[in-house]
Image (cartoon, rainbow, N blue to C red; front, side, top):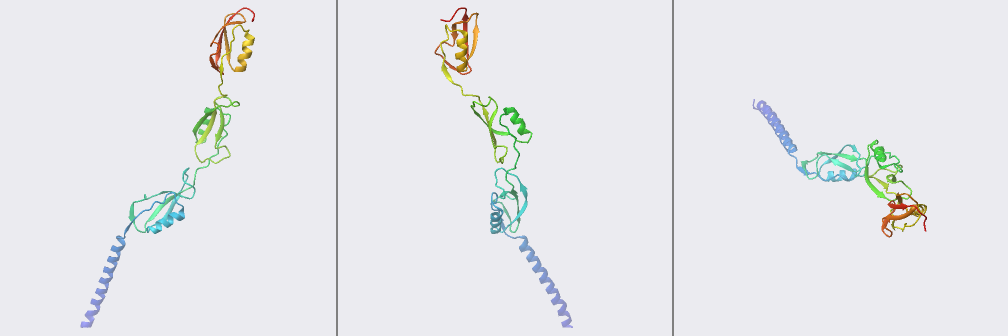
Length: 231
């Protein structure tokens, strides 16, 4: 009779020990240690995987995205910021950079600045920097050069050089008094000056600016005219 009682007791004790062991195992697993998340942005996948493994974590790639500043193939962002504490063996999700988005740039040279801006806006782009330069060959207000050029990869801001026209040259104003209008126009044309006359006749009797004053290409010389013949 006693042996019949011992068997159920041993069985019950075995079951209780099994339940106790399972409970303790659950507690140990549920209260696993926490670790600090390392910085993996701007790392290669190999470097990031190694850094996470050392911290007791593992890497999970969540996707890819374009970025003009982070090199293609490197980690662009991570779902848990560096320095945060997480449970050991957790996956850290990352997004990998695809590098800068490649656009097809239009040719902007010889366009006016507004036309160049419009052409870029149609492609979802805009001018990042405008530099004014003097040019003897390109009309004022038009694009002299661009960077990048149409066949180059877009990796940063678009820069355009816009013409200011030819350099302004400074002269001492000639003495036009007692000169004929034809003589004045010939000299003024060579210096890039404009002439305006007041009064009838072909002989210069006064001028503004005065002889010897500083003038620049494009300035206007005002002349008082009277009848007569140049001396």
